[in-house]
Image 1 (cartoon, rainbow, N blue to C red):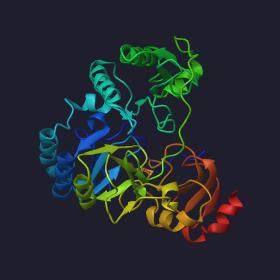
Image 2: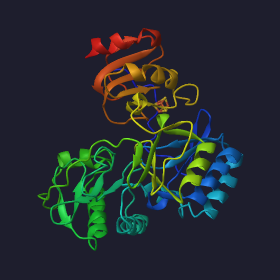
Image 3: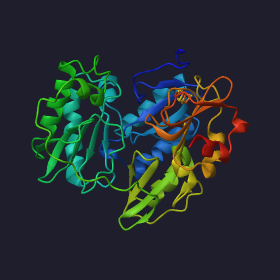
Length: 374
Ligand code: SF4
């Protein structure tokens, strides 16, 4: 087997610890309670223009990231984020505070997230990609969002569930965080970081959990679609990318802007704003994922987003176009994945980036190509 032509970082960028990319530093901002105030968002838009290249991305962990930050603009940007109350106490705590919260969470759910942040800050040293999901509504909306420890709704109240196991244990609002951290410590102490490759689902395949897992979680919700809802506006952006001007428009439309892991933002109680690049209904681009690709990412072997845009109306399922075998834009399997090589792309079906398949040049990829691959 050929060695992969990309570097696995094993950690996600933060604000205090940005990641180098082809267009400069990537600075990730992790909002508390999964939400920004309108004032915070306006200030971030201004900072994206002044200290970055004005491009903002919505991430798969419901965070915002600014691109094109330089070594000299990083310090001033941190000062802005500090003033907005968006910085953690140190890079280690920031790296561990991977908590995704349903955008339809109650205030009590968000309070539980705050309790979890405090416990994580004082808890064990967890791997960079290890995360928590708080998905406590009548239907689970974060079932497809990567997370290792999940708090969900069960028949009797809340349940704690380890990723990779179908059932969980009953907990209450009072015990939920304590039990979640007990599970995190068990993961570390039983070798999850090394033998479990840093992820819970891999670890529980080789070791039984130390508690009963008989509690069944609530059913999964249908995939969210952008549009006007009774409780607010759900807005998607192509590939999760928006310009600073769109952030300002969001801030004008609502006092609170909630992040989601679906390349969408939710404006509770708001009417749909008029934003040119917003996707506000069914659209073929919603099922297409593409990473930065060339020339923005130094590891990219091909351009990705123009190709993904061209192929969006042609694909019969979810398509992932990846600039190398690493698969940043869609870590799980997609119906079709095109992984870049030095010569073109490899098309595989029901696979993750980097899978073996049909070798093609970009111009050879047409609607028929997908029919042949099915
Ligand atoms: S998947 Fe895309 S963004 Fe990630 S390292 Fe490869 S080329 Fe870069």
